[in-house]
Image (cartoon, rainbow, N blue to C red):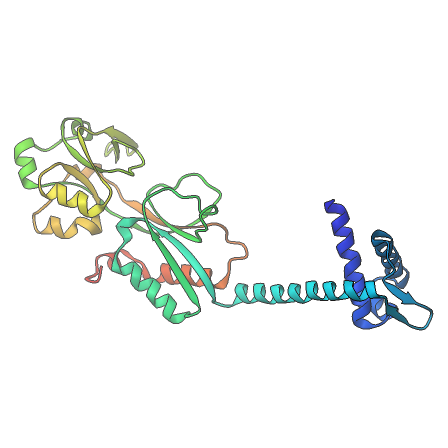
Length: 308
């Protein structure tokens, strides 16, 4: 069926150009085929439909009523195809359309809004849809063009561009430490209450970098309070409810003010922020320019700015 449709469309393509140029010979020359090949395809098309499409003699031709009907359909097909081609070429070169971006909730901060706002001011014909959540997504199934990812990347066929590294902290309040003591190694966390994310990829374990072996190791936590936001984690930790793990830019001020105290500092490590996209090939201008703007404007300094 597919093979027949392909052949039929090819024959309609020949028929369309014969009418367009008003001549078998001119159409054959324009299309780079022989006149006999062109006539053979038209005979096959008439045989397929069991109708005569063209009245022809050695000097001129005219379309039959059936041929006129097919011409109208063929003309609409190729006019729409030309419009589609022009639109696709515009989208590949011009900044217009929509971009959907998936972002972890911890990055629901002004520095991100400022980048997207600046982009849409530069390119007003582009709309950026932002999705702030922490669930794992299938970018293709969910129609996501760009995704920010914190930490190790899962194996995938997607492409990625590393942006910056975040420092990380294990933190507790002064009251908590006075009541429960300071864990000396991650093994001691099993005896402490911790505050952890519901979406933590390692479950009720935290990853640390062994300062002696420089290997990454997972350590089991004790009783755990589950939260879904960085603000809740820091608040519970500050109130002395448990030990928390946080990115540097989220807890720096609280550490400086003495509300939180960093612990196990020799075991923590920096984690990357990566920009993930489906493919580098045939990337539309709107997406390519947004990636460039993000890379040019996102930095550790921007995360720690007053606006963030």
